[in-house]
Image (cartoon, rainbow, N blue to C red; front, side, top):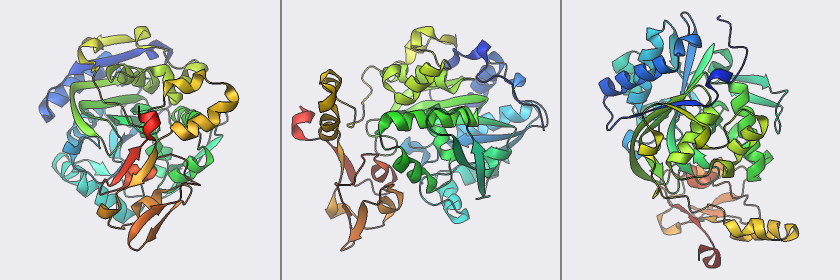
Length: 389
């Protein structure tokens, strides 16, 4: 086993990101671009011969690559080739939403195109559903995590996320992608432990600092806008972005989709720890100009917090937040009663009645896991009409 970097994120690359235009999902084009980004970031310093490298893509649900809900398999295949060129072994591992079993993994790999990609490019996929503990003594919100075994045993983790908006965290990028290192239904448990968005964001920053990916790559060729991470719409961005600090990568992602990094709780927590640039202006951008890829008209999630709440007296903010927070609404006539929403609900507020899902709003914490995991996309995010105005 190779010795890991003693400092993370590397001070030299704390604010550095690479960005290049990539117009379509072509293996040859992606490989050429990633080779250049690996070179610019000196990836050989953290990925060395003989290492066991785990690639962590975003395979949150069983969805076709063109849906923009998952990391495109060709991006992962090209990254795996670059890692192998550095002499390391590669394993692709993920714990998507729902149960963490071999049958569930097989379904996810088949449904996202990863099984076919693995056969074509000779890449190993993980089917080990065991897990273990890793302490987080320096964690701000969480002092330890249960993680899937491949992550625990890896010499290095390469984080390959999909650029998406997110109904709970605002942004789904490099940091949020690492939530998939937590096995199966333990993810709803963390939602239950940290129902408040600021606390959940701190937990995600803690998790990122525990996993310590050596390289973070963003599939931004086609992003997802609106009610991501699964219910939004594809948005062509035409870019591939990477960096050795996942927090800096997410600052670049936020800037590209017209979000303010300081309003994203996991990034705000990282800024307070001194491991994250406070704005896109602090980034050192290699390759092409980040400004060329900014989409000011990027559709934000309907759950985006209203600005007026912070101007209210403190004693009114909890009630105002509760009233202003959108709630998941099930389109009952289209619900098939599959129970995926109930399975993923951390507060167990959803049950199946007359073959339809029903939400008990007295216990709902507005985590939107049900919206995220609904395979039929029949759960909307709706705000009270007053706050919609």
